Image (cartoon, rainbow, N blue to C red; front, side, top):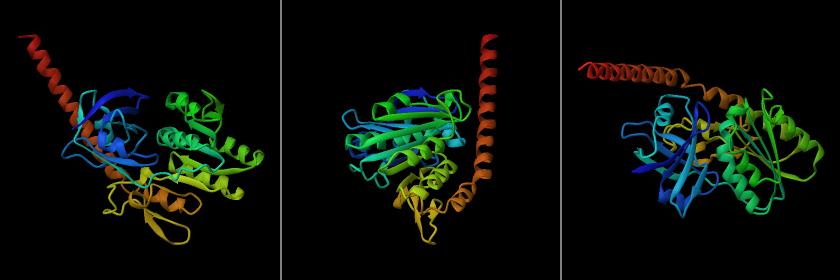
Length: 293
């Protein structure tokens, strides 16, 4: 079983867990992901590996509660176990000494961006990092990103911390004023990655995005994570990715595909919440009866 050794609440809906998974930790590389199941009947949940420690035999996952399965996962505590943790899966990030690189992370995307940032810095790159979120409460790992960045820019949409700006604003300024930007990595909401791609394309800077959020099954069997490119070709995120050339992705189609199962996901979440409420009410009734003999 895959025991939870540490849990941290990063925000109201974002949780961090360190999980005992020695075989995964031993092989994990920056950019790869795992598939987690809460229990034997649970949904397969693809999550990018936020950190790993081969010596300790642990991996770190960070997830946002957006549906039934992730909300259920968020209730797990230290000592609880996942039924399955399969991985590492996907192609790892191609780490080289490119020269000067820019890392752009939005919201929960900061988590999978971190190990890539660390690996690129350790390979000798000059690393400029930009991280952002809607507000200060949704920002995390600023200290970790700063450790492996030559320069770190922090943004919030509402100006509650750092610079009041979208992450694309300082990115454009860097591209306009600094020569020799060799690569840009961007991980975050799909709409953010779309606009990062639009910002870098006029400058001809290769831009890599991780499309892990579109994955469903994680094996290539379901076809739900198919990504279409501007030239008409297509690939699957889980077996061909999760990283792709941002300038080739058909972003409008990808955003449309991401909404295909929204209604079913919402219905499953609401049914689960109702079930949880009934369980809580039953528990409270039993407690009251016990208290009154």
